[in-house]
Length: 452
Image (cartoon, rainbow, N blue to C red; front, side, top):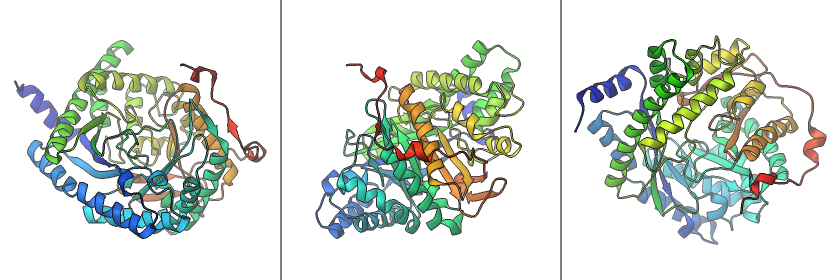
């Protein structure tokens, strides 16, 4: 039976605390589109995507009206194109990216993910061709997102892939330099990548998934921040309990939308990703949650502990609200998408090194961070290797999405608009890891990976 107080509370969360469904993402398998003919492959993936997701946007809009719940994004993720298009040449992969972009435009979605590869243990010919195509593909498309998994706890770290990703990020930044190197905002490097993540730029449709699936990502930093503010000067056990209860309510709303979308689209329900995904909007910041716990500014000593408490409590509350929690699920710390993070970087409280420490306990990693455009590729590789090592050693997903903003230096600002926001360019340690990166090969998996 509906409780009127719960209904009113949800309305207040939506109207006053920025509660929303961040995305409904339809995953679509492209394995049945395999073809030796590049043009035929592109036609087949365009046809399948536009056929399967034809009603995705309209269904999302109908659910918004029915429940009064904002659904910010409607998205599609597909089988990693390096797998589905393994026979393609480099130029063929660029054609495939354009086909994905056309499909996204036809559907009216904001992003399509899956232009990527899984190379944590080595490369196929298709993998190499796709990696070579990434910079051009991201420069000639507007909605295509790319992710590359370069490591896993079971396999270790493919340092040859890490080295190549540094060069790819630099080239992508150059090719999109007229738009503040925005191509890099659509490119993420992973370890232990999940197959059911609904959030971009890392979303793709895993090979263990059904032909199509609906995954939903919820968001509610403003709701959690408000709950903490109302709690006042309580102890940490009470604070964790408040966050858990709040996360439960947020996730239940996501579960409701996910089931309704699944029913209307006649598509299996996959997971609810209960991540706290911030936006540049005032009052929708993970950094402000941490400051609400008592930190003068995000980045102060104690920030990692506060984030660990937040992430754990969010997960505990969410898993009670849904039988199928997946994706990334926790707290995101993307600098350009979080006004509190932007402010903390601007005043010098939050550094790249502190962000790296925070990623040991949060959901993703170094995300949407603008760095100087003249940063050497080897330094970017070092950033990637450090972050990926955290994920491998801790058996968790970590990732890197950095933007070497062409022509920009520390203190300058880059702007991407919309949910991608804007960011101050961060100063980096200028000592070179070039000789370390040049060793190549594979860093072995940690001993605790041997669990069989």
